[in-house]
Image (tube, rainbow, N blue to C red):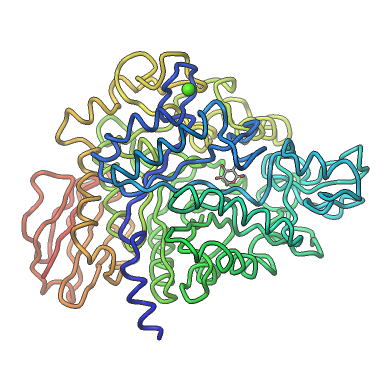
Length: 566
Ligand code: GLC
Ligand code: CA
């Protein structure tokens, strides 16, 4: 029985897919208002087909006051007017499908916007049909702080009670204990799935079930409030809720699901993704994102230490394999700094080569890789110099908190924002060297990176050696070589501080992946046990990489070398 699940598991389309994440607001503006939109995405389908990806994940496109760029939804069945209409969406979906691309949408159901009719009703009184749709208390019952600053509890005068909001106060948390709320959510899922979408990325899914004792959270990372994770992450009923959702809705469609799972380690993730438990296909974890944190949390100047990175990635590779779950592989998304700046080297000399190395290291692992828009160009962190240029609620809150409460200088805080702000990933996609990087005819809602004249799609497509074509090849390799999907991952040389080396092992074949994470040339020799295998080069970011590999290799700065043995 188990064996059969494993087989069917192996052939699932989403296991062989590469996902491309589109941040609609910043991808392409079709009507000259400075804001990306659905028709803009539609225009770029040929570009995405050329890259070779299989699935598009769109960040929230629903009606929203945009306090948190669409993660505050006021109507789940309507398209945000600045992005277009329902007809535009249906056209986009149809054209994407025709071009062989699937589309998954972002599902944000831990919270709604405070403008959602449910909340507007709920806040009116303690006894209306929606009163229990949210989490209301007579007093502030614990020390939880909101992700975006201040207490997680906000007073609503009409009702003379406090409601919980783990994120901005305009994002009240839904009460998943209420079965009516769950049924409303399942109806929303059916609404979109019946339109023919191919799945969901589920926002902060590990936070759905709140511990009803609402325990205080530890005060960590120099924060003003306690963490809500103690009572929200992987809460008592989260698996029950997801199994119910799966039983009632998800299992009835051929779709993919990926849950964003803050505060979830690999053992906990096994509970979400083990196929026999019928919850989700995979989750996004944050373990590798936390490796450069310091006592101030995310806003730190540390670099990710390679040995620690290998340890975390390996833990997840091993655990997901062992539990019959599945990995999602990412370096970057709309909440993170740009991959090449954070994990590679965005200097003139090494930007492209290190972007390719990072792509290699991730795309040869087991799991479904996610490419964040612009990653395939080696786009870098934003070059903002003034706080006024930042748009994100988180960045603005951090600036205030660090300069006013923690006593950091403005310069130091701006430097931290430059390294880690979510806006780094949200600057407009760089299409060409024309004004506004070809993103829009109008001034974009957020400033374009000044390096767009050099780093853009037009240049990348004209240069056969570009990061774009390298990513195209990485994607093609995944489609061609089943071992990239199925092979067993094995880390080599765990303590090496410069080289990330690993194997993928099949029954009769193997891959060896060698990545130099430094700007030095490294003479590298693999372990005895690997030596015997004489292998052929399948991809490298250096043209003069040796075609055959035995045991020793000279690895150039940020060099990536993948060899295949049959
Ligand atoms: C997730 C989203 C992020 C959003 C938050 C609240 O982490 O990725 O962008 O701000 O949830 O919805
Ligand atoms: Ca527009």
